[in-house]
Each structure stands twice: as C-alpha cells, then as structure tokens.
Image 1 (spheres, one colour):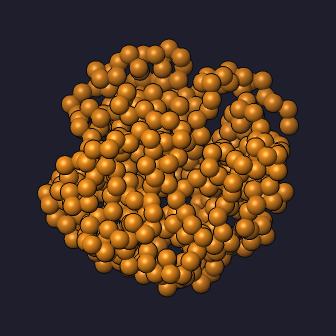
Image 2 (cartoon, rainbow, N blue to C red):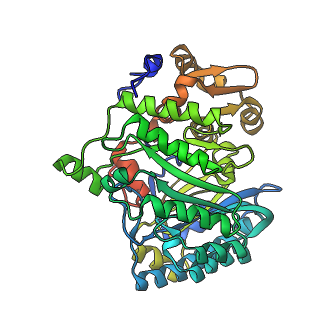
Image 3 (cartoon, helix red, strand yellow):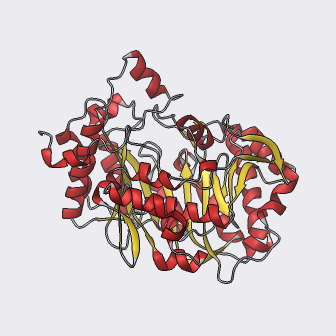
Length: 458
C-alpha cells in the first residue's frame, strides 16, 4: 500500500518517536533502606476516606524469553518459582495487613510479566486467592491475567475464571507467521486462533490482545491484515505497540549483526499507526490511551485507576513498580535479593521517590495525557489550581505546535499529539525527573541506573 500523503503533516514533529510510554512518575531516584520502607510509605497511616486502588502482581517467569522484551523476566526454573511464590504471598500480606492497605478497597487486579501463564493452573489460582484473601477486593473488581498463546491452556483459563478472573489479555503480537519467525515467537498463528477460542470456551467475556507494528520487513497491508483479523475475531480490547528495539535485548543484537532485517523508518511507523487507528475507529473501537483501543465498556480499569485517576497501585513481585500514598517505588529486580528481604519481613523496595504536590501535578499531566486528556475539574479538585497556572508556558508551546488542544473542560492531545503522545507526555516531566532511554530500561528491569543517587531515604 502506498504511503498516504495526507499523513505527512504528522511527520518530523520530534527527532525520534519515543516508543516507551510514561509508566511511572516521579521517577524513583533514591535508595531506600529496607527497615525504613514501611514508614516512608506511610503504611501505618490511614488512607483517604473511600480509598479505591489497584493491585499489580509481576510474574517474572517465561517458558521462553522473547527476543524483543526489555522487562524483568527469566526462564522458568522450578526452584526459583517456589521461592518467588512464597515471597510474593508474604509481600501481599504485608501491604494488605497494614493500616493503609487494609482500609483501601481494590477495584482492579492485574497479573502481568514476564508471563503469568508460565505458571501452573494451581499456582495462578494460588496467587489470585492470596490477593482476594488479604485485600478488600470489590465484588465487581476487574481481575485480569496477561498470557502467552504458548503457555495458556484451556485448563488454566478455566481455573482462574472459576476463581473470579474476568479479563484476559493475550500477547498475540502478530497473526502473520513470517513476522512471527522474524521475532522468534514461541507460538504460531494457529495457536493464537486456538487460544482465543479457548478463552471464550473458558467463559471469558472480556478478551484483549497485544499487536505490534513496524516489524522487520512488515508491509502496510500485512499490518492492517493483523488488525482486520483481530476485528473479525471480535476482540474486545486491542493494544497496538510499535516494535521497540531496546539495547541489551537479543533483538537489538540480531538487527545490529544483520541476522534480522531492521524495522521500517519512522514515517512508515506513523502511517501504520494512523491507518490502524482509522480502521479500528471505523469498526467502533474507542481510543482511550496513546495505544489502547476498546469496545465501549471494555477499557482496562487498572490503567484508568492509576493513570487517569492517580489512584494507589499496590505492586508486588521483582521489579514491579507501584504508587502508594504518593510514594513511587520499584522493587528489587533480582529474585534472590527480592526474596531475601521478604524472608526478613522487609518490603523489597530498592529505590523510590515521594511526590510532593508539585511533582504530583507534573505526574498528573504526564500520566493523564497518556490517557489522552486531563480534566480541569479533576486537576483543580486535587490541587486547587488550573493546569495553566502551573504549566502555562509548556501548555502554550505545545498548543502553538498543534500537539495540545484546550477548552473549558480539559487539556487534551490533538490528533498530531496522539501520534507523538509518548514524547508530549514527557514534556511535563520536571527537570529533576528527566531520564535517559537507558536508565528507563534499567528501571523496568529493577536495576539501578547511573542517575540513581547513593544516599539512603529516611
């Protein structure tokens, strides 16, 4: 398919189209002593009245490690899995039994990774039971598992569905077997179709998938056929990612060595994104974040709570990031260190940053615009200011560049701003919270980047 010249106004807005979204803010920069974590987080305090938040559990194991994945993960080893299970249940217990955690209610629970479905059905159920038994999980909570077609089975999906899971998100990535071979995927298109049918058979009525675009040698038509296939299958929620070639991954090395062809240029990437957006919206999907499209009512509640409403996110597992009582934290990524701290009855946070009111305002703009807009009434209700009173020059500059739009109700990404949404969101990072690409990748792995300070947070 020829490049559409109508998309040319969306080109060359920034030198590079940032593939990494705003996932946490403020950026954790300070080491925190194990004995001090509980107090610094304020877990002995009472939360605000009617405090509703989310729980995230990171499962770092995979049956096989994807060559493109930059996150904290490791090949499945039974001894490490046993160690992890004991540690993560202990961690859940500490947070949920604290005065702050015990008086918070949970409206969304997400198990991500890694690959939660690399675990047995019994262990998946065991983790979910631990969350349900310790936290005050609302009866209508959205309970979601991420999974891979290679490790998801009908038995596993039936087991977690029977325990109360009501949403599943499957890392299909592509239905094109040629693209799958480029990426060394551990499943093929036939298995992807099978597992989606099995999810329905298991009783899931909210099914999402991830799709990646701008893959090596991928044409526009090949990409759009992936999107059309998802629509034909009636998928409820579709997340579209541009392939991120991250240093330290096997994919980066293979492309550098010429084993795998490079991805397309940024203009093709923009075209692919906009064509997918056009197709999905024509089919009735609603875009509610920079990369999420859903049928009405099938949005990811975990995402809405944390990014739009700035609610607490109780995070568990190695390298999991959370936001509790305005403390942004990341857990130790090394599973031995993570487990060792919990064996000593310490939480396994290793770096954190407490958000004062100003940093919380920066965070609301950066995280909120990932969700396309920031409502004025929400910002003013939380902080007592209008966004322009704090970020006037930045907002004016982005409006003048056609990346933001404003009215009496909200500040939102424009059509051009959505294409470059990850870049625009980071315009609202404070000077103290700027990060390099490398440091963000290391934080995602629970590793200490060079910018992390050496002093201990008291």
